[in-house]
Image 1: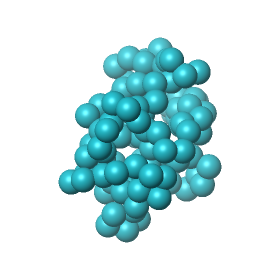
Image 2: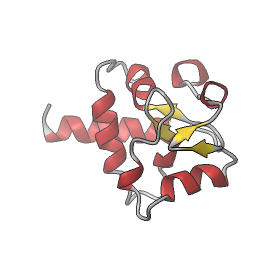
Image 3: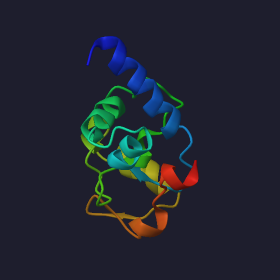
Length: 111
């Protein structure tokens, strides 16, 4: 995939992430499936890593398929990702979102 391809993919990822409602979370894989790129969950992760200079992309709402805060080390501050989620009413214990199934937002069903 060339630079142009990946940047347009990243833009498509950001469009989806901007639509995740406050207090809800989704996974890298769910975004990839929605975009028709089922095997590109890692690429969605790269897009999230590159999004931290974009204030309007709530990257903290994207976690792994088990509800674990795998991207937390890409946020400034030790617990920034967890704090952002908790400020939206999401309970996190040991980097794991509690009630993940209830809070899960699936773009295939929601958009």
